[in-house]
Image 1 (tube, one colour):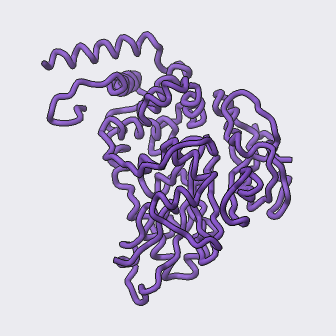
Image 2 (cartoon, rainbow over the protein chains, first blue to last red; image 1 turned 90 degrees about the vertical axis):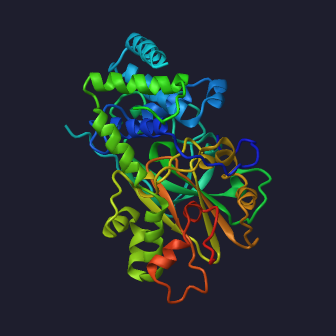
Length: 100
Length: 97
Length: 197
């Protein structure tokens, strides 16, 4: 990405949301730092982020890209399956709706 | 089992060039620096090869990693700034010649 | 773990985060306690830690030399834990100004300074900092003399970088704590310089 034309740097910052901090924490733990057993490398994560289609990359926020890449890496490593993920996401959505 | 360590080939002050190759896959050598010449600023140590690690391979044997200093005016056509301005980039030995 | 008191439906990726974490916990890959502890740990890492390192380097010549030689060891010497960090410290002088970027992703000395600001991770900063540093610095309100050499450091691999800014004049006799108070995160990234207020 270095050297490509781009716009003015907007010195934005935001207070990280709890879910974003948890994504960051997962990345650290799964890379084997801070007491986590090493389950993957940051290189795999970066590769998976680089593999995102360009329009998806731009539409997703930083931690959306990371959670997507961590999930993909866990699937590639065989720790979870796409099916399990799909089922769990449906279950989580259902639980959330029941709180209404 | 110990993979034999790769000997560092370069020292501070050596002139080197980044290979102008464009393999597929995950790389940590930016596109903008490929083919450019610079000077070794320091040897950082030896680290697992990220191209291999990205594919779930061991990344062994570790590759020597250097900080290489490039002149901005050599890297960017029409660079406007001080002629002494530099761009320091970490490059793995297997990318240098 | 709910985010806040007010009810907000999960976005798709928030849903993914909750689901991924629950699956990993079910499979014994991580525990909720580990995640909570790691979140708390990162929350406690902040630019104040880097400012202490800078203030010590300004007041102790031996420490400054050590810092420039081996950034990680120097931080540890100050009692700062910096797991997995390989720190290279680059020094600003009257002739040279340093600036840090990671064009490939967003590498940053998180274990010392905590999480990086959004702009550091933005496409615009990552694309332009390497190519037109002066223009980017001017957007941050930093205007350097033409004769100053700018060194941009692209964290492309395993090292992480910290800029050791110049100690401003008018700070003679200041305590380390007072010195640290003028060293902002942006000074240590290289898009600002310490100012006396």
